[in-house]
Image (cartoon, rainbow, N blue to C red; front, side):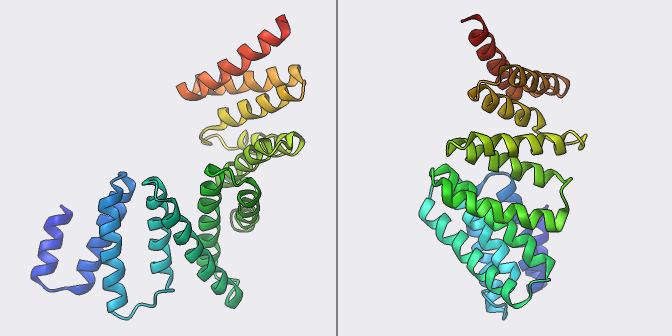
Length: 247
């Protein structure tokens, strides 16, 4: 359908319509995981916008550049991804310095910081990842408030990094808060995994009763929501606790 619309727009020589359709196609390819196709289309959209007078630091260009960085990450082109994230963060920070109350800029900056932090986490650059995630978390609370799914996701990520850094106390704090907020959000996805994450850290601390309770909560949530992956995680946690108890 998009190709039909594109041919019609090209026949009418409607520049804006052509650019818009390419943009929709690029985002569709990105969402479907067709990253090479998305790359070509995003480049085409940006070239058309810039040729028509759009600044390279316009939010539309930065948003597409952010998706380009993410698709490079998916394609394993880490250096390109890192350059892309830094480009977006630098220009968004400059905009924040000029106009800190622009919510679109703030939200896009938080998204860029979150995505970049995940790349850093995958590279085991824990300190730097933690720094960006903490900034993204602060912005998320300012924009969305504490009782929001994205806040819970970021708390879970902060807990994960803290655990990987060996800071179990901080990890417990983050996971506990994530679980408490998540329990108030009936549609919260992957809440079971957060309870299991908490259980695993509590187990490392030797707090077996609390760990068992947390993993049982994760098991119940996994079962009630037919989340097979989380159910496996919960069972693994409970099996480990049983082995320790039997030793």
